Length: 438
Ligand code: MEV
Image (cartoon, rainbow, N blue to C red; front, top):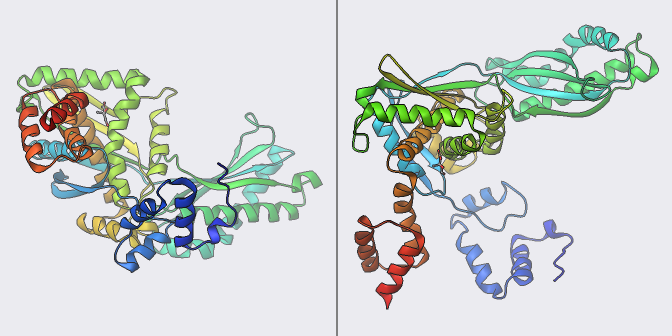
């Protein structure tokens, strides 16, 4: 079937849905109804969501959960998490509770520098370009004053601009590499606006620079864009306690547990196949809070994974040690987050999430997000090194299977009772339901 369409974006929402329903569904009315079932009954809220992106046809729900009892630097927080994966929120809440009686999480923001670059081609004498840059540097700041004025009032702005010679990598390739402080905003728009002005100034000033030859004056700007790699925007989260304080239900021998835990982290430090999954577990916590607070989880993901490879091999983001009878587990990660601007003032549930977190600054949010990541990693490693991951996972997954089979309340009670003492697997549950229904 050829389902190409022209002028789709100009159709109304109803027309778009009708077109999709007839082009792709054998029962178009059912598809239309399903899409409409997910519309918000409050027209204002629906309109808001319709306008976040283009060609909106409905809303895609994922659950918003909360993990309470996070003791961070002596203060309790309830952390909102938007995530579809069963057991993530439960694991976070369990880890929070565990550490709340063992000193809690300690966090520090190490630095908050953001980065942006103008990538350009210059055919000529690199030394002349350097003199030109040094002479023009103040003009880059002056020409962006109207953009930076407000940010400066809030204590941010452009920190520095340097010229980088990248001609060893690509002939004629240079960069303006700029660093920024963007305070409580993630800063993408601010940075990109500054960069585009730098690019304009660069081209214009080069035309007037008398020492440049005709070809040197002709600077070709390839692109101006922020970097989502922010290795100088780092937050640290840590937990620690005496080894014997680790004892609890699944941890009978705390010394053995601590040693195995440290080994599990060491494996992720040296073995990329394990590191990816280990870090994925960390991202379960990080993405969920980043999403709930209206931040860009793709940017955070890209930046964090790049950081995990900064020494040439993909490695664990977290680390653990035992020293003088003290177990310490920590993580340092780059996080460029905002608590003003973007979705933070638009999406009603994002606003609610930020209010639940007591309206954090971007620095505070960095710490909360890092803690969610570390807690998730702790929960995963505790399960992996003790009961195994499937125990908890499959119990949560049991719910999904029951929903899939539309089990009624009586069936649910019987099934849950049975699987308290039997290993949960998809096929075991399906067999059991089928037997019940015979
Ligand atoms: C599953 O979403 C995450 C884990 O695989 C993380 C890990 O293996 O550390 C449990």
